[in-house]
Image 1: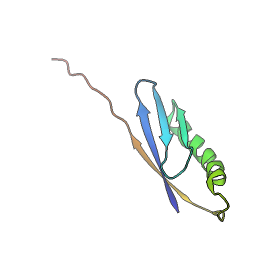
Image 2: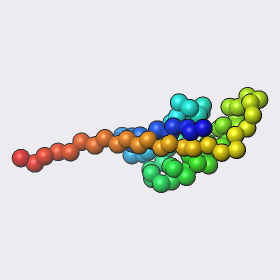
Image 3: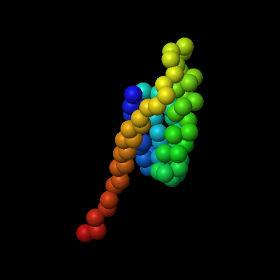
Length: 77
């Protein structure tokens, strides 16, 4: 099983935000990309445990991190 994690840069707040359609309740943010990855790795097992609703536990799973950052660049001219 592999879960997709979306990492988006929020320019107004100057933070990275992690969400996932695959993991209910996953919404985390951090000013550091690497720190956010660590927070996600720590939170995912707990969120999966909370959302399993009596289903069998999974021994291992994959995380696919998809990042996106948009910036506006001004050209002097």
